[in-house]
Length: 183
Image 1 (tube, rainbow, N blue to C red):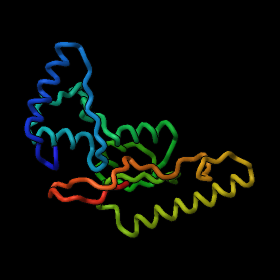
Image 2 (image 1 turned 180 degrees about the vertical axis):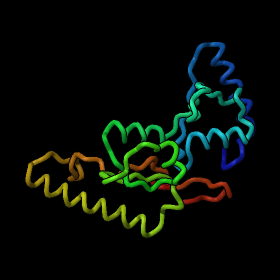
Image 3 (image 1 turned 30 degrees about the vertical axis):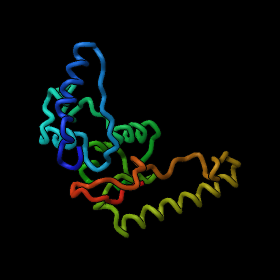
Image 4 (image 1 turned 90 degrees about the horizontal axis):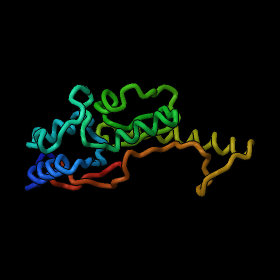
């Protein structure tokens, strides 16, 4: 889809794909790098475009999170944050904080998380993220010098500090114009 419009033929193609999947016992998974909206909102947007259950089936109807055959970069990022005990300073839309990132601890951040978040890309928020990254770089430099920790090819410590949900530099917005992305 582009914006709020299905690409011509996409709904019928998805219906055929899932019919083929059922007939041949295969698993189909759609991947998306959207970092602006929650999985639940994305699924609703697809439903509003005409992608009914036969085109995008929900695999667990009892799951309030809208578990589906759609895997998002936001979901992968959530798992990464949890597995690595990361507490992000978030430059993502509030909807994601309330849904897909619900339960992720953000107190005393130890990384900066960037997604497509037009409402967060303003001087105050970007400056706060910059200051945290600069502070951590200085702390890592002193730790490396004092303890002889290993460094990567860029002279950085082992700790991840800046995490981008995706690296797209631009995208086609709902007005069909190119817009700046988080990458």
